[in-house]
Each structure stands twice: as C-alpha cells, then as structure tokens.
Length: 116
Image (cartoon, rainbow, N blue to C red; front, side):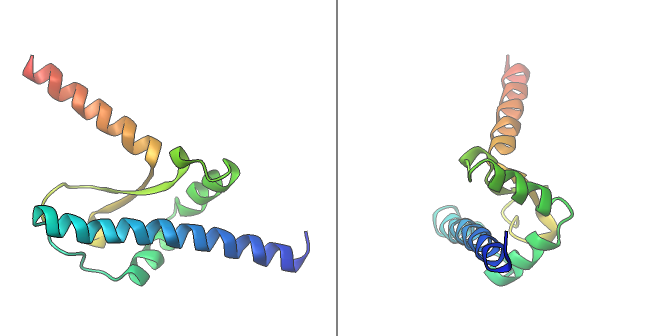
C-alpha cells in the first residue's frame, strides 16, 4: 500500500467516525429537547479529541473497520452514571453498539428478576 492509499484509507475512517459521532452528538441535543437532559458540556470537536485519546479507541476503530463497518461493531458512547447531567466527558465510556445492547439486556434481565 502506498502513501496515497494509506492516507485515503485513514481519511475514510476519520470521516465515518466523525459522521457517527456527529449523529450521536445531535442525539444528545434531541434528548435535551425531548426529555430535559442537560446539553453536552463539550463540543463535537472536543468529543472527537476525547475519543481518540481513549486507550481502547484504536482497538475499537480497527475492529469496526475490519468488520466492514458493521453496525454491531460501530463505536458507541455509554455512560458511567445515568442522570440528567450525563453529558460530560468524565461520564462517557467507549463501547460498541453490540456491547451496549448486551449490557442493556443484562440490566433488563436483572430488573425483571428483582421484580418477579
């Protein structure tokens, strides 16, 4: 692979990640309007920088790319604590769509068991 191909591939990855995070960021604004959650205390640019600074980001991005950008492997933001003030960088964790879905199902199962 020559330098131009490497640059083109890296550019494509960054664009796809940017678009994905932009959709997520817009979702934060929608949650604010619909449910009264606080607005994010960071910009989209700060969010991108934060994602790239996370130790697991390179592995998660590689997994997503190698899967052909499969939606289950798409990077997703999770929350350490769910509250109305959830949108601060210190409260975010990187995960994948599939990991997030499995976590939700486990938590739902626990709630169902507690309610039974």
